[in-house]
Length: 197
Image 1 (tube, rainbow, N blue to C red):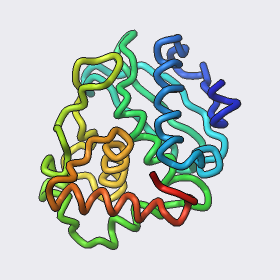
Image 2 (cartoon, one colour; image 1 turned 90 degrees about the vertical axis):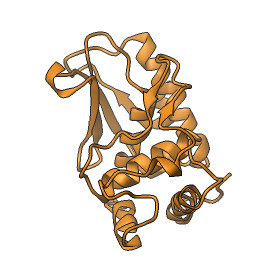
Image 3 (cartoon, rainbow, N blue to C red; image 1 turned 45 degrees about the vertical axis):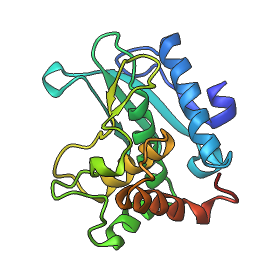
Image 4 (tube, rainbow, N blue to C red; image 1 turned 30 degrees about the vertical axis):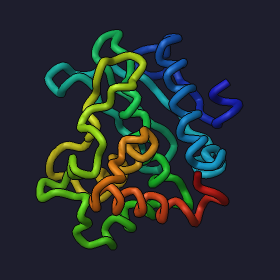
């Protein structure tokens, strides 16, 4: 179903095989992304392969790694723990930015903002731009950090965190930082979509 609808191959060539819990989460998450992207997900990303791998316990609970050529994403989790949904959104943000034809379009758009109000001195998006620093609607976790980027990383990570929170509906539209980030994401996506809800 994921391959047919989104052109994403859920590959078992990683350290772990995809189980039904992670496959269901991926299907739901890609559907959420596709809805926000006006059903253009497949045409924007082309074919890609997602693998599931073992997380080194010394490096935290989980992370993702998107291939620079846009051909896939590797998701890392400890043991049998499921992926965090916000991490799917974050890595797909990188996938969009790394896809042939869109290479660094969104990273460059952040760079061109020259110190946006929604980025703090530590290079992370500011919590003031978010409804919450935590995501509470992940189907497998009571809460997950909304900011996925490590301190000190630059525009590509800022893009992916902003995109992830945009997809997750976690942008605070009651203050200037949130409004600015929301409008940036909409403006960055607009040329590639016929309609934005």
